[in-house]
Length: 635
Ligand code: 6R9
Image (cartoon, rainbow, N blue to C red; front, top):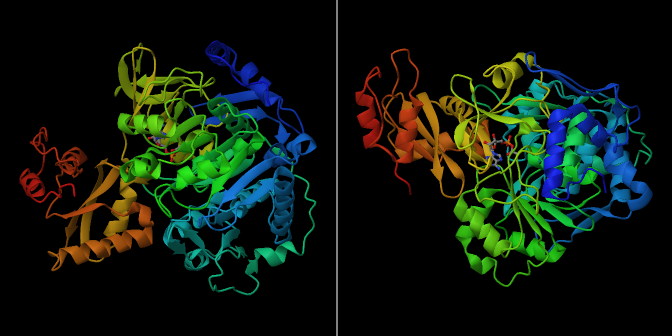
């Protein structure tokens, strides 16, 4: 194990201090524990104005040599993955580091055979199976840029992402299963590809044996192609600042943007945060329940654990199949020591009741984690008492797609905990709270917008193909600071509590959804004139989606129209963006300059209609009464 593991609170404080006083020395020492083909000339060059951030400048490495090759000498027979299938009666599949290395190298050779080379963008659209991790690593092996698209996105969303990145290749499967649902991945991809002339080759894994269309000279079978290549694939030398991957995420405006991470800094940060936050030691079994299609899966199923030589559970299914005891069955079956999941999952399993927990042997658990949204105290205590049996620390990890890895979190077993608080910044992270005017709020017992004033190795480098968008979204709101989009309070002890997004992003079950994106999808529906979308508190999902819709004429069957709109949103974005509530309205509360006053719509959606505040600046204050009268109550 590495030498940078923090082992006490004093060591945390020392590391933190050093990271602020001598950041280059601090990160340089950590980076020295990795395999580099050529050492860097300079640890850090940066400015937040352009922005332009470079870590380990001039260094050369390949992240897969650090994830795989470097473990082969001593730990080749250690398990890298334990794959748990959707159906608990199907066989578990286990891969050692040696086996994973071989599979990655072989598949990398398949990609090469089909013309993929360093810098090419490759879209991956696959179920949660080991081949997904293999595909990701095979891209990294040859220096191709992976863009993983979550299996729940529609053809339309996939096409947007493929077009934006101009992908030349796609890796997918015939189908995937999650719970009782089968997703015809190849067929959805075929619809997307109609709009994507840049894609020349598609590699298709046989998984569900769903019949698929295979276009000659474009589509090839994964298994057949593997037969045609060798097992030797040297890792492509990559500059520390070469692109590792793009991952699309929603913001407050426009289409999702391609958050771009580079090789060197992301690598160092993923391993550093994984080992420290979770205090991972072999032979612990780490189980992160996220999907690899999201950043949590990238950093804490693929890269972080593999860099550390850890053993992880990779789970194909969902928490409630075949019943709400599935996570606990998996913990028992594989003797999981560390469970890292999302508050929305905890709340839904809590609602299902203790009968699914009772009788399960959870004695292997030592540490628990939470990610994706604020965790409410009730869920925190339920998790702590019933799953951790009162003696597992819970690390509430705050971070974002853009940050590459965890920024604010307790260190398991070391940082004193407070329910609902992400707690303290990790070494290297300099958070600050900023008021509306852009002034930094000093001291404790204060609230403001959360910014970070110094770069860390995992920070976003750009948004693919549109650097200006990166600048305006993250670096122009407050001068010389990275703006997170989150509101935050710092209590008397200097502990951080994230209060949620301050922009027009809704966090539904830990997934980021832009209100503008949902509005655009609804507005595509025939007969819709305009719509406005806001979030509202939801018991299980954290936030739900509430849509106000103006139609050309009153729908003759409101329920049918609602179903139709849901279908449209599913088609255009994916089922995850379907509104929970749709209210038909004849007008929206707009200011004289035509801006929708979302504050009012949020209040109505929350059911707080008594306190709408000042509505006198509205163009037509009477629309508010109509909206109040038609508000959809919680069901
Ligand atoms: C890792 C991930 C990022 C947004 C972020 C914030 C919310 C994530 C949180 C949290 C409170 C936590 N968020 N972790 N809020 N406490 N521990 O989720 O990335 O999908 O990009 O979402 O999620 O609002 O800004 P991403």
